[in-house]
Image 1 (cartoon, one colour):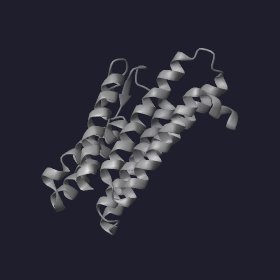
Image 2: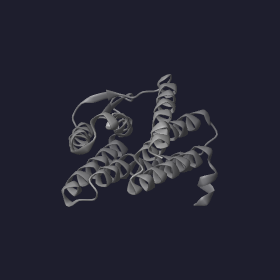
Image 3: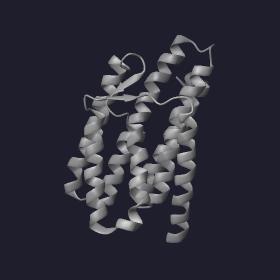
Image 4: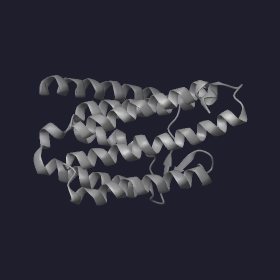
Length: 204
């Protein structure tokens, strides 16, 4: 099994998993700026592994099949478990937040299962909103947290995450962002990481 880890795209995927685990850790600790930084870079690494894979023409069919399964399993952690734990932690792990966490995870599992079986529509379009968008917008929510604060932010976050969960499995078509969008995601991650780093210093 470990032979597949030597495959560069799979190693990149596992680096993304590490970033997601760090995000979950900081979310549990209530250090949300650090959690957002880690989850954002999990997105960057998730995009990067695909770019590396497409650039490697010598990969075997087994490596490609293994990588596809690994990427999907890591996605459920990064973009399902991560946001669910963030919601639970913001709600101080109160019972009212358990249904929301379940909805986030359930829709993520359903969406990934559907994608794994049916793939892209016409080879270039997603059915429903891709899961990585959840973290992109989650970070945006937290960027405005100092301006909202208190119970209002918690309520907005809950409603926002439920809306994203609905969009994940909605019968809508969304484009698969490739090419220059990759550099846009990196720029977004860098900018938001700078903002959240400033928040960390300010909080300290």
